[in-house]
Length: 218
Image (cartoon, rainbow, N blue to C red; front, side, top):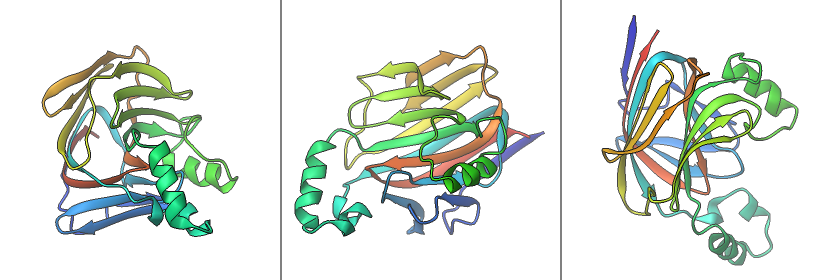
C-alpha cells in the first residue's frame, strides 16, 4: 500500500516539535516558518515513512536574527553578542532534512529522543538516519551514526532571500536529491535504512516552507 500526503499549512497538527522548549516552528500565512533558537530545533512528521519514498518541499531562506536566540537572552550586551555570532557563522544557515530516522538501536525516533535528551544528551550522532544538509556554502548527504559523508557538493548552495525546491527520492538502496531540478546527490547505500521518521532541523537559520508533498510505502 502507498501513502500520499500534501501539507495544507493550516496548523502543525501532523508534526511534532523536538525539543518543545527549543523548537520555534509556526504555521502562518500558508506556510511553516521556523527560527533556530538553540542547539537543536526540529519538526518531525507524526508517522513513519518506509520503503520507496519521496519528498518534495519548497523553502525560502530568510535572514537570520541572532538576537532572537535563547543564548542572546543571557548576554550582558545581546546586540554586540549577536553581531559577533553572525560574523562567525556567516556561511552556515543549515537546513537539514532528516530521512528514515530511528533511534540508536532501531527503535522509534520519538521514543529514543525522549530517552536521549532526558539524559541531557544533545545531537543525533548516535541515531540511525540520513541527513540532507543545504547551507550557504555547500550541500551534503550524510549517514548516522557517525555523520558518515556519502556525498559533498561545494557548488550546490543556498542564498538568503532565494526560493528553492528540494526533491528527495529513495528507491531501494538508491537516493537522489535535486535542488531546483538539478541533480545534486545520486548515492547508493548497500545497507540503506528503509523505515523511519522524516523531519526538518534548523541550525543558525530561519526558513519558510511553503510546499510539502510526501509519498511513501506503508
